Image 1 (cartoon, helix red, strand yellow):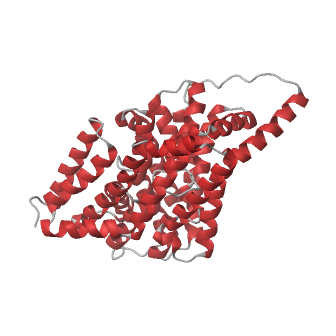
Image 2 (cartoon, helix red, strand yellow; image 1 turned 90 degrees about the horizontal axis):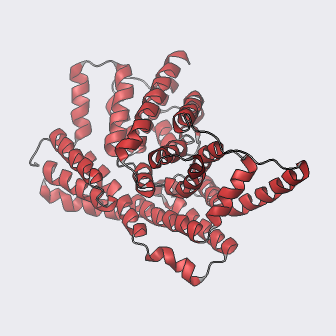
Image 3 (cartoon, rainbow, N blue to C red; image 1 turned 180 degrees about the vertical axis):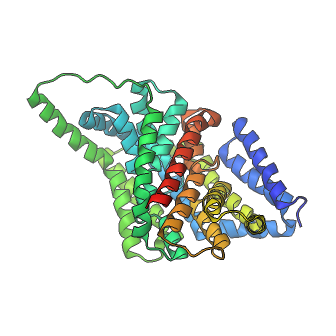
Length: 416
């Protein structure tokens, strides 16, 4: 037995995490220290080495850490080779609206389902929102929120697949109910992110010059975007043809290596430019943070918090609809994992109801939205670090977006 009740230990540990975030302690140190503190407070100390070993030896942990390292390297190389500038400038030329470009690119890059993947779109969003004069916290919000608008309707999302498998509801039936929610998420993100923000003025030019510039910008964009596109295509191809690879997490790692090779081919960097990102400590600290996220999730599960929650829910006579929203949202938040939130929620609720498309969809979106706003969500944590802003200031925009999206899910539940 640990020193404290699991629920108390969880509260103490997350308060500690909040203090670490407030003091801007390195993210890798923060996540791992919080996981170890929670383990020391709530678990038999003899079990801690086993959890650490199992987390370290888990193929999924290894794959995500390697993929995070690859994503960081790809992101840094995009910046060092200045290919990122070509993508941003050409996208502006094609669409000619920085608000739309800043909203669209994180969503497109959202097709790459990797922990902390918002790092890839952060430089793009930064360059576009700088033209609009957005504050760092709004830049961070735009990057994180639009990054996640694609996942509720992304058919090869591992979380959707897990939800369908555990509830016995087909993926297309769940996706159909998420479409209105995604539409609201996009609208809310645009309104909150760009409220009272003036668009950059367009320059006038002749029709022939516009056509010529459009062709040139389109070509530049396709070339600059090709490493990311190659990564996305390889992920989809591997998931469709190599069974089990996605469950192990190595699909994204392999695809990232392909993306790196494509970037090297199109940019032809010197050895100095190629080696420069490897000399940056950030790339290693963030990889450590990816490991810390898994360790914290596994320790949280080992505390038995989900069993306590189940007992409380049953004895308290709480309405099923409330449970369908609160349990997944809380667990998605606590475990910092939408799949973890879904899996534990299904195990808690399976004895209380028979899942249908409407209940499965509500459970999924609740867990997903709970995960999006948790401080240990790598995309959120990495983005806040990238834009050097306060997490509390970003929450001024994240929390209303979360509440409106969850309310929309409730409306969809009753009407469809």
